[in-house]
Image 1 (cartoon, one colour):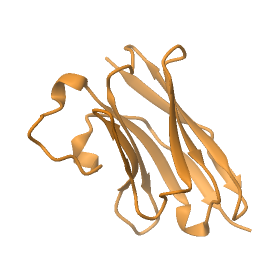
Image 2 (cartoon, one colour):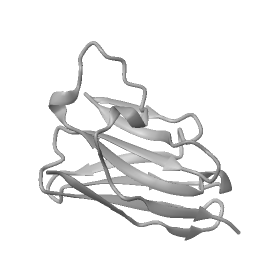
Image 3 (cartoon, rainbow, N blue to C red):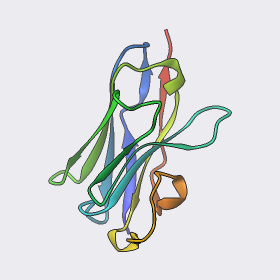
Length: 128
């Protein structure tokens, strides 16, 4: 029964950086597909970075500014955010999909429906 808890959100000025952490418990994240999503006010939940089967997807709006790291020993995954913009404001979620759920013939597009397990989210506010 994998559980995910995000942390690291807060208020940051435009151009600043934040590191969001996703701590897993109940099971190891190793070999899981991992996704980071955000929900901005008035917007639909969108994928910002997803990793599955050795492939990394970057949302167009964050490519070049957001990166992903994994620490298997600590059972955590991080989202590293640089050059933050006001448009990055929102609640950020980490999500995981069990490795056996990956369907080889399916095309994965970093959509929320592709992920089974979700954290509660952490607020990121980018404002001067």
